[in-house]
Image (cartoon, rainbow over all chains, first blue to last red; front, side, top):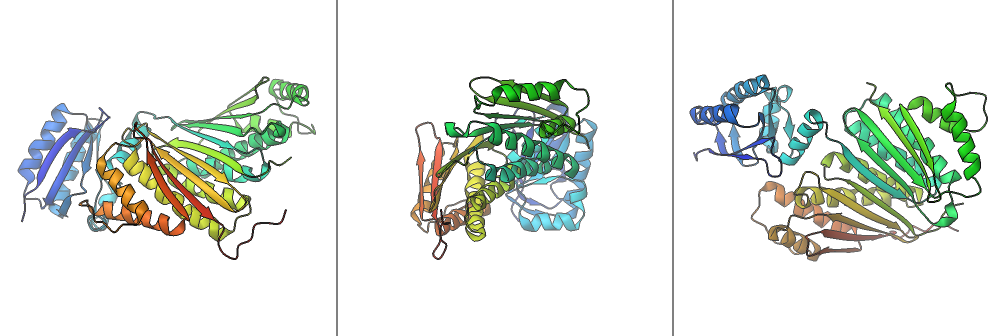
Length: 264
Length: 157
């Protein structure tokens, strides 16, 4: 049987993570070597450890016991030990042993580090979408945003409310924008663990700008949205569903900025 | 008033595989909104999934890297350009080149590498045109054209 090779490095481009590459069999017999490596990491390396195992050939229950011990020590130091790049066979075996209830497993190192940054460092991610000013594209746009929030573990209720906000803002952008200008509607979404910020910009329709300015003033300044008002219901709905709503008008375009804090 | 075709869309998202399902579904739903059939839309979804997965896996060296999709919908076809910042590795360039040319070449890579090659073969099979470009800054652009399939008619005006 070939021997286990262990390499320890900081993950490329990211200083707050320790990457441990394990090549060969993890049979449990190499415990002394791994004890030494992990003791060294626990003493002097960032305590978030990604065990990269794309070249690990065997993973026995005895080795799993050792890793549970290393993880416990890292968690005590506010860190974690996660697995990345496991082969399907080893991953299935670990699932059978119940290891998936203790260890998080990722397809690759980068995904593991992204998940860590998202959770511990409140990583904020930006998405930008430019789409034609046409109502038929709005359902795809709102569902795109909702799918991202769900993927990022926002609850289904939160995601649906964010979807409703996107639907209203984008419908307004198309209906009240200057569609003859040939300019797309621009949507920017910033998301982190705690909030979603959306900014939607369209080309201003010069004929409607005064009416829109008046309407937005009345909705933004009223403490309670009036349900009897015929116009501006969409804007009132956005206001009810969001934590912050700002609207800017200029000759360049109309820009709506909405912030919604995660509720669940 | 509706804008007439071609429709131009552009999407920029983080080099994070969490985004791929939302991106591929967005492309499929946009195509259906533009009167392409569900079958065409679903096959385009497969193409987007494979190219974006490759772009993130092989093209995003930095954790803050972004992928850009330029997406044009014509009456008879859709054109897609997926751009990633690239890693500047010869292996990646060769893999892409061989996949685009349809050559059967085994790369001395791990098991995962073989799956990527298969992914690009699927893209080639489902597309009428597939080409790529790598500029001097390693910015990699993969361009795909898919045309309406036989029997599928463009909607009447």
